[in-house]
Amino acid sequence: MRVPGLAVVLLAAVGSAGCFPDYEVGGGSGGNGGGPVYIGVTGATFEDDLGSDQFRVRFTNSFQVDQYEVTVQRFRNWLDSGGTLPCDGCSLDPGGPYEKTMIWDAAWNDYATDSHFATDNPTGTCTAPPPYAPPTTWMVGEPQNNDYPMTCVSWFQAAAFCFWEGNRLLTQAEWMYVATSSGKRKTDYPWGNEPPTCDRATIADCDFPKNVGDDTYDGRTLDGVQDLAGSVYEWVWDATWTSGSPPLDVENYTGPAPSGPAEAVLRARRGGAFINDSSSDHLRNDFVEPFAAGEFYADAGFRCARSDF
Image (cartoon, rainbow, N blue to C red; front, side, top):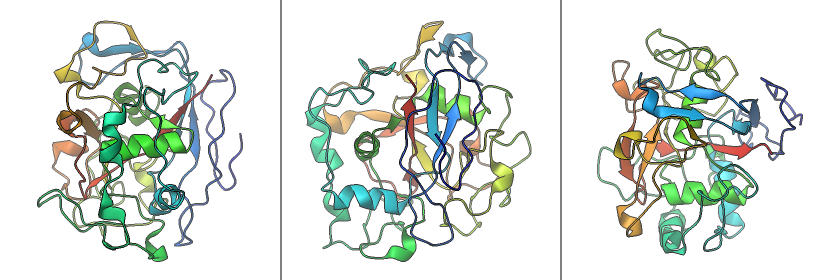
């Protein structure tokens, strides 16, 4: 579909794109943040940048991905609607390739309804200790923040929000595929091998927060996806590959299923954030480590995806 004010990049004419909400971007207008980029990957086999074929993933479906990170306004829309959560046992990718592996567990509900976004806590203070504590972009009743990337969000909230919009979180394989311009270039960073600068990424000393869609155009992928390095870390669906290495040539890999109590669930964050300086490995495409899925980090945000089927 055509999204007003945004180019939908068609990489491979495979099926038809689904529908994201219509988004207006940037300019301090209180818009909803970036719309979709269409990623045509059906039948593609992708080998990650870690140089090991044990992480080779074969996609069966194309997908769309947010061009920009989820904004405060988009997240506010969910909260204003009541913060609806998926039902117990419901698929977060109904009809898609992850229909049977992306499943919501009611044990996660308490971690997706944290009170730090309530009106009695107007600054949305994060629960994590420094250096992951405030500042945060969420402010109750502060529309001037609406175009900022949303932060201080747990993995459970990110997954629930994307589902509410009719979308889902990216898998790690999909995130890597997008970061390498649909597998077209195996580079250190989404834009290439040049070191991070404020022209390419919002990193330490680069005036975070900024409205999504502002600046860092030099840091976009060839497909036009922005802020995959810097700005905020991005939650993805699965845990780190090193904690549950998949076999060779898996289809639509979603990582090891969450197990045990919700507070023990570990999920991965990708892309680095505004706290990292230009020398940080966290900004590289291949950097990944586990984090507690129920924590609220002031440097953590996310973007959504949608399967094409």
